[in-house]
Image 1 (cartoon, rainbow, N blue to C red):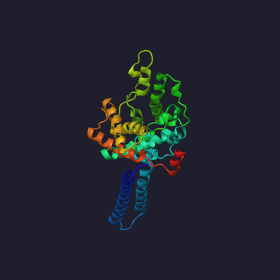
Image 2: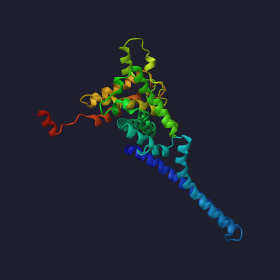
Image 3: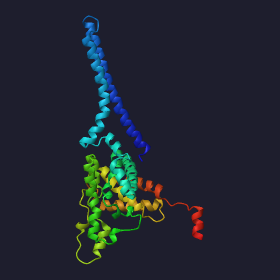
Image 4: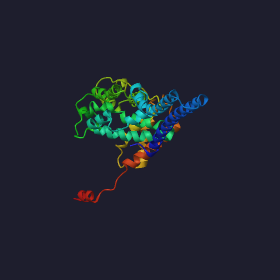
Length: 320
């Protein structure tokens, strides 16, 4: 869910638009009435039928300015691919078709995406990036996993893992395909270009390390390029934040007896890995931005994945 700070910012933007639209409409109405009065004063001193009609049309025009401002801006975002705030707020609704499909087909991925959105949003506020775009981009970054959800560990609730019978090359192909498939789903649903870019860039050209190492243990030569994503490296700070939130949240789930210190070390390790691999070189992220992002992610993940006190019945069950 969005933070209070972001909600306040979004509400402020909407209020500013409302004030601008109402002010513009009021100006049109005032100018029309004033013009009608001046016209009448300079003539017979009485408002004739023409002046009255002009004033009425001016009033209607002023009201139309206000109404059209609120009706057209969301439609422009939907049909032009522009990521204005109205369109992004619409897409952040859990009831939107793509998110609803993701929740149904891949509930584990959906949960991961919501947490990733919270991380990216908070870090964007910290470094001065577009928090709303970062959050919405994170919500949709893994929608391609809805095509073959059981190939991703967060959705394997029944314990079955199709990678156990697939070759490393086949596994890597399916895993990397979720980026291409997600971008295609996003384009078909007319998501803004900025959101499609985040989907395309959230893994960059990273190595699918587990299947690469598995392939190296087998027979024959192995090319590292065959086990890398064929997407684009993050080109914006928002896309970089989603990439880092994605790996940080996933890594945090593997930490044994999590504490803020252990989670901070884990986040630093995976973030430094992306930096060393050159994934952030096109994103305009400074070292100060990266350090602040690590701090934000470690603090937030520690508040979610901290160790918990066992309930009395759990203690008794272990004794038994």
